[in-house]
Image 1 (cartoon, protein in one colour):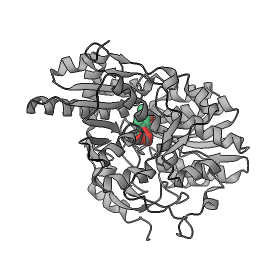
Image 2 (cartoon, rainbow, N blue to C red):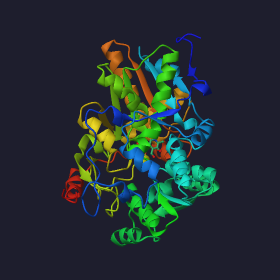
Image 3 (tube, protein in one colour):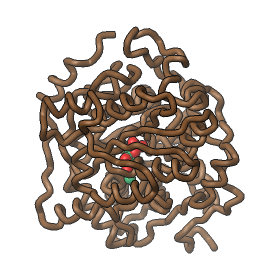
Length: 453
Ligand SMILES: Cc1ncc(COP(=O)(O)O)c(C=O)c1O
């Protein structure tokens, strides 16, 4: 079929990339080294070994351009990869735009998002090392679900600290995590010292990813058989997610197309990295391509944060990393895209953004849900609120191009479906959704606690 007819572009299974792409091989400036939280000296691999698998630590600092995907992971990837690339024909028609809009649909994975791309290899590399149990945090619940399933598939236990506000908004996420054999508690919890201390400060706190990370790390540090696993931010997670953009490139080649604009929503950054990083070499070679990360206006890490060394958690247990940050004590308001409520940003995304290779925009909650509704009514898929941020920007870009009378090829990552986000959709439909204003005052207060480096 010709490009003009194809709607669903399916890469044959035997064409799935067998290597992850590592942008560290091509960056003009590598991120500054992470620092040990106690000594503030550059991290040595041994500093990370109490909580991370050795292979994952090696990937953190690897400058190999391509890293082979283990056969055991490839086998499990085959159940849901390659994911489909869709041409958004109905959306294009509704917008009456001259642009071609494509979306890569990661919601087609069994857990409903891109998160399994990293959960499987993370659990695999821990299993190889004899680890029996993993702890983690989860915002919207998508990462916790992916880690629960991956742990079950490789025979490990999963312990998940879920940000309290999402735990309340999405009770069925916990059901799925438990169905897959994981244990899930609302964070802050009374199970850890850091959880108890947050509850003592504010018993009604909505929680945050930074608090849940503290709890998960503290738990992992208590037991020899337990490691910690992070669903975004770190270099190895961005490497695993590169499978998304690599597949999308091949799928676009199948229809003889190439994007002018690549868009991904940005929480900790691995989803945006996944779709965008495989295009960075072309951009460096002079190709005219824009790579845009989209964040919530209520948690605008790239667009309003500072580029500084900071912790990823509230208790100061994580390595200190140079990244865009709103400060580790910044508690983002309880917006409905729980997976984007993180104060920091992947050091790789941060460095590339700082060097002008990536762009960022911040969008408001109501405008995002309005875009989600247009998308659901045209393309039929109910998107996750996080993914709807990318949809908003794709629509805005397509309308802008229409106004300018130019045709562009727009690619975005539809990182997940929103079947467990209906509480949020109900709030939107009943007109009760607020556009929470970002507080400059809170930001200035939170930035006071940046570590002195
Ligand atoms: C559906 C969905 N999309 C995107 C994100 C953000 O991902 P990342 O932290 O990799 O930027 C999340 C995070 O939970 C998510 O659940």
